Amino acid sequence: MEASVLPPLLRLVPLAPMLAVLAGVALDRLVGDPQRWLHPVQVIGWGIGWFRRVAEDWAGDRPGRLRLAGTGLTLLVVGLSGLAGWQVERLTLVHPVALPLLVIALASALAGRSLEQAVQAVVAALPPFTSGRSPADLELARQRLAWIVGRDVDGLCRSEILRAAAETASENAVDGVFAPLFWMLLGALLWCAWPDRALVVLPGPLCLAWSFKAASTLDSMLGYRQGRLRWLGTAGARLDDLLTWLPCRLVALSLPLAAGRPGSALVNCRRALLQGRPDPSPNAGVSQAAYALAADVHLGGLNHYGGLPKLKPVLHAAGRPADALAVTRMLQLTRRLTGLWLLSALAIALGGCIDVTPWSTQ
Image: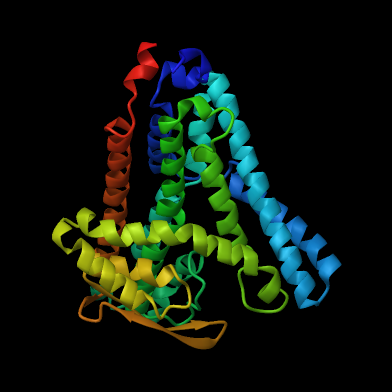
């Protein structure tokens, strides 16, 4: 391979894509999402809101037109988000001094620290058992919980608050950490495997991560089975399910390794798939079941949404009720599994399937 065909960044540092992802994860863990900074997801949300108004003005209440408009909206939002990431990558490949911009952008696609802080804030707001206080003292915990869950929180007791915190910690670990991280790592490995094509053809870590975030944001904003969204949000919701499907199952397979029980990986993965199957979401039930099994916690049961009861599948019925230690354990598992995924991807990049030696010796 001629060194001259390589982008300048990959000619200087062949493993730069993987190192950029590592730096992005580290930045997310250290800084999170500063509230005063403009976040790419906010921009994506503004775009979705604008395109939605245009789509509804054109489609009205006609289901066929709404489905068509939703498909076009999804392709446009995801395509523009991926293109924006692709442009940042091109800039970085040609001008290595722009690498910090790529690292910051990659960190913006992750929600590890913000998820952990939000869940810990709920647990910290719970009064101790020995306080002898009234149920009104749970109000702060309910308010903080309402920021991160979709269920009704009014009147939830301590045990139900802890169960909700554990369930959102497990479900959002896939949505906010492992799914975007999977697409980042895939993009980085593609660049490492075919560095001569990175500048022209292949999407990189940011292009794939921002494309996923766009699909996830579409699902969050439009993926509701009510009113016009029943048809307008279908394409975005299904794309999000599709892009999350494989990362979710990789989490179910690898989480026992992070829990220190590698021998139970296949068994627990099968159990998570079986127990999570009744959930309406193809991924949420599986991710919650995987964490329930790894942390030995009983999850699922009756929730209320908009005043209406909804029975969620019971997960790991033999486990212990969710408590503060169980929630902490789940957050620890997320950190450990993140490290395991990063080390595995780095080993692949350094291993026999990707030979970096010719790149640096030409």
